[in-house]
Structure formats: structure tokens, C-alpha cells
Length: 359
Image (tube, rainbow, N blue to C red; front, side):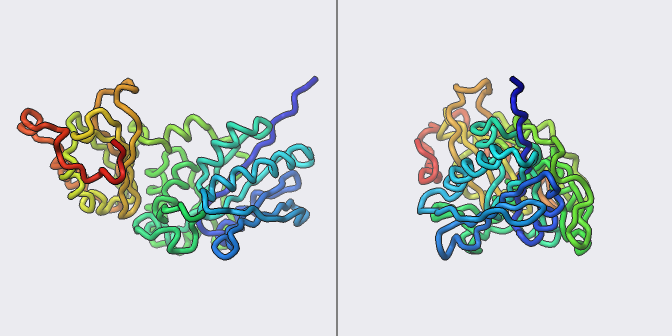
């Protein structure tokens, strides 16, 4: 008995549903079915609406209820039976999943890989707005402030979402490029944020000039490696055209109070940074470092002893007009000095991050 071939799925993400529509149209053909999830009714009615369509027109529609818990989690749980049903009908040989604007591709793709063996993720495509891209990556506006949060616990900001959508994409469609003064610089910025991605320009009508689905580009291991806690340093792009990526490393720990005082200076001119750091007052903990726009966050990643690495600091930062020497100097000034290394009781240092990092 011949095994049923897996159905390829292309995942479409991006903040603007208007700019995504011509890309979605380009993905549809006679053998494709699309599931489009919208969040227009989420704030008012607490539901995510969905519709199924193919090249011939609408097929079905409905809604998913979102409670006070994680909206993204509930969406993923609700989508799985719908996708299984579409596959079982064996009427189409390609599925497009158009996610709601505030949804990141990574948890969707990870769940599909883990739970739906009859589907293979083929392409993750993200549509970005050339006019608003730098603004979206540089601010600190919360999704909730724009009515885009996926439920009450969602405290992400626009910059964080935009960066994560780009970092996981196999294809980035640069829409509105004709309205940008420096489209080449934006192309370069996208490659700095995700060296794996293929940047496809869109014409003035928003129609992509290259392949955006059924590309076979998705590689789960590679996507996870780049979008993980620490961007692969061997893929850091060379600086050019106003875009700079800095790789900063140190085998000395950071002084927690000095790091806290320097946060605003560190994220100045940085649109995105990620890494793993070593705080002197938490000598055994691996601490995740992440910033997007003007917001920085720290989280725990387990113990250094659980890894093959000695305790160290590694941060990759990308910015527009970023001065590498200035950033490196600010970070270096946060490290313990030689005399502090020799004389301080590290664990007695004040802990400004006690409210966000467990002991």
C-alpha cells in the first residue's frame, strides 16, 4: 500500500492584511485551498473569524472563541482539526494558512511539524511594509495599544512581533517599495535580521515579483537555529548601506546594576538584539537577552552546567546608523572590572532584575 503523500502548506504572516491580500491572491491556484484567519472581531467579541476558500470562491466560514488565556495557543489548538479535515478531503494538493496579523509563524510551524504528519510546512512568507518597516521595528508601542493583542496576557510590542515575523520567514515580500526612498537599504535590513530569507519585491499593486509559495525553502532546523535564543554568529551580515550588525562577546560577567542603568543607551539605534548573558549575581544561570525597538527583556534559559559552554556573554545587535564602537564600549562598561572580579562577593550585588528573573 502506497503511503499518502504529505500536503505542502504555505504560511502567510505580516501585520497588514491589506498588503497581504495581493500576496494571498498570488498563492491561490486551481489546486490550492486557503484558510484565512482574521482578528477584526477579537477586541469586541472575543473571537477569531476564519474562512476557507479556493480559486473558485468561498467554501466555509466560522469563528474560534478566545478566552482570557493565550490567544495564540487557543488559535493553534482550534486550527488543527480544520486543517486535518481539509487534508482528509484530498481535493487540493496545497494549503495556504493566512495567520492573523499579530500571530508569529514560529509557534504555528512548530505545532504543524510536531502534530500533523500529513502536512509538510513548505514556505513561510512574511509581508512587510517598506514605508512603515523602520518605524515598526524602532518603537515601543504595545500591540494592545493598537487593538492587536491576541488576548489579555499578550504584552508584546509591535517591534517584537515585526522582528520575530521576519526572523522566521523563508520569503519576505517588500510591499510599497515604490514609495520608499531607500528600498535597497530595507532589503539589506531584512537580510541582517534574517540571512535565511529571500527578499521578493512587490509591484505598485502589491503583486510579488517572485515565488511566495511552494518554494520548498522551509527548513525547520535552520529556522529554529536562527530564531532561537541566540542568532548564529557565523551568519552575521557585513555592515553596509547604513545597516550594521554587531557581535559582542565577553568571558566576564555583567554587573547587574550597571547593566540596568545602561539599558536605554544599549538599545539606542538598535532595532533588534538577541543573546545570552552572564550576570555576576546569578553565576550559574544562563540569561536570555532580547530587545526590539526601545524595549529590552531578560529571561532564564536554565543553568550553564546543562550546556557545553562556559559562562560567557554573547549578543548580536542590528541597527540603522548604529555606531559599533559606541555600543561595544557601553556593553564593556557594564562588565565587572578586574578588581571587582577579585574582590567582590558577586552574590551580594543588588539585583534590579529580581522582579523578572526567578532565583
